[in-house]
Image (cartoon, rainbow, N blue to C red; front, side, top):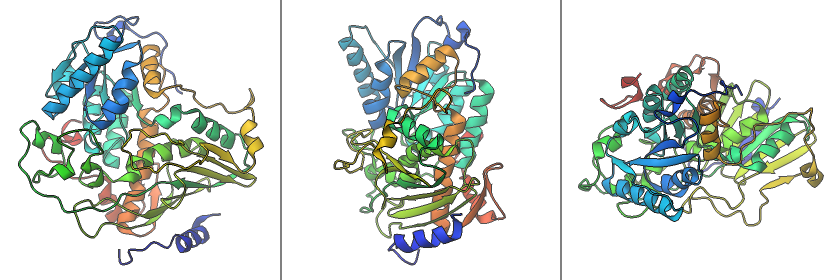
Length: 459
């Protein structure tokens, strides 16, 4: 981009002028669903990836439920794998349960283990779709962290295979299991703010940083496997994960492995917004964006930005770090704002405290006392994301964050990122998931995959 400064006021004015105008499976599940375990027994779970989000969120989030037992861990970093086993065994010891979690160097071996019924995938972003696809093909149920995929092509591959195999896949967009996000969406869907016309999403960018230093690959890390389908390149701790500890890893700020905050936290907020917009199974019809990208250093994901997406139903969605972190629904009769409050997925998330901002607010406080009537729209209720996944494995019901919704939400993030890169308005067809009459933009729907890794070599 020629200009590094973003004039949000001019952009919003220009954008406004231009554009504003469960299914259920059978409830009786055969014993084969649980491997050699009967439906009344615990679901045997394997953990793929034992890093920051796994330790702080996914592993304890699953182990707290008595319907499951985490029995195996896998990580390409030998030290993290051992730490993962220790975390599991100590967790169960405190509960008075015996545990001797198995360790796997290769996630395919974990998936193919007949004792395991389901897997949690808490890997870096570029390693989400492939193991999820392979687990589905092996008839294992899946909990996968967001973003659902690195590209729109990967996401479509994953969704199609999961739906064909009829396995239970839960996407880790856990805001759906937070009462304030559900209630806000219900209020909007039931017309409490009148006709919805604008949604403003507050989402920060990431800062630039220094240049990475090439280092020797640590002996404990399978670096080629860690790179996976992405291009080969020299190792740097700054662009992978810390050798010691579990602070926020540098790969989150590297486009080789993801798109930055637009997919990192973006999939959370876009997923929640789509709930209130009633656009969960579609996407925008046009998107335009401006963004700052670093001009020096090795961290290269977007910084300050704004994305405008317009939907077929007339709703305009604006996303920027200039808005308070959260979702603001604006209708003809008022507005509703919802956020996590002081909640963070992990202590090292780069989200500032909200300094007294309410987790649920409205133009008229009486709105928040409204009761959703029996004849009105009631959205899916879940008390906890991992528990909902486990319950659905046993019941056969679809989870609160199923794969098709996850794929559609991730696609909104990715088309926004593509618009950032091209710096022009793009027309999007959510039915065929392609840009309209724009061959250049369509080249961004997939990435080359480095053999033998990548979803293309699985499907």
